[in-house]
Image (cartoon, rainbow, N blue to C red; front, side, top):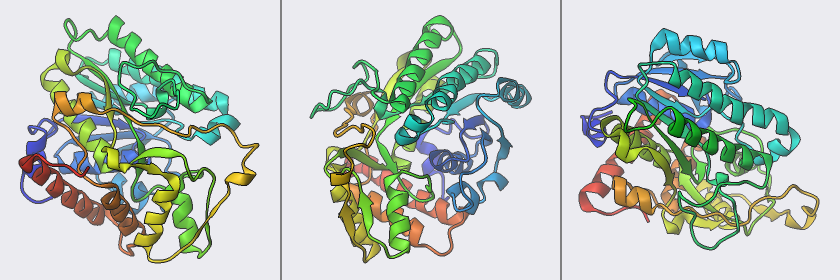
Length: 371
């Protein structure tokens, strides 16, 4: 990455620091590892094997750039050995079962991973003196969703209709309990926050039952895209958007534990809150060809899915001076460019990151954003 602009964004906090990322082989985790590596961090990963050989982690060869450990977040002893061996200073917890529909099929496994996995992670942090900052990545779906037309704020009640959503609410409650019991920022050297983002899109996600991967598979095979809930409203954002918030928050927490520990929303600007159908139409336009079909009439027996979910990001805007950089159109363009590229590797991902950071720094210098 060119010059030191990206490091200046975070006050050089990550340079030379040992940073542990759980879930590093996943979609968001792989992009976070690339960004941390570009920031000069000593990156340690702990996660299950990548989902497919086409995942961003694999094609970008992220594992060759960091110290990658394959393990289950439910395996406390193995996780603790990684903590003991590397003594991380900053921890990002992303390891999770992250699919709503899968949680209906595998509720116990979802809770085992998302609830006890959080406990295992926080126990390791509690018992590791080197840890100074902990970011637990949960979900916008952790809120007790009332299908409001306005955004949820960080102090709104958590809940969750389905096993996935409620497991993330449980993770929030567990984190709050550890903060109150063990990580009081006034008395303790550790700072802990939870972060909630919207529906993340970007290159290298191939999980089942996710809209973008399903769209890309259909487009590559010249088949119509089937959409189950065309009028559902979601806060869409490119993967680099919330990651910029997580990194900014972690850098601030490192310097001021008491002020910045807590819960934070990192959603998109209001213009990026559009229906599934609108997103699919835009994706097809950027792809250059394709069609879609509405499957909602045959979905009466399908599991419950939220129809409307919006995040209020006033706290991040006012207390962190963070705001979204990309419009939804730019987020889709970045995503399509990754999937259409024939030469995706680490340098390709770093170039997308470099382009994003250029927009980010220009936006901050002018006081504008991608809304």
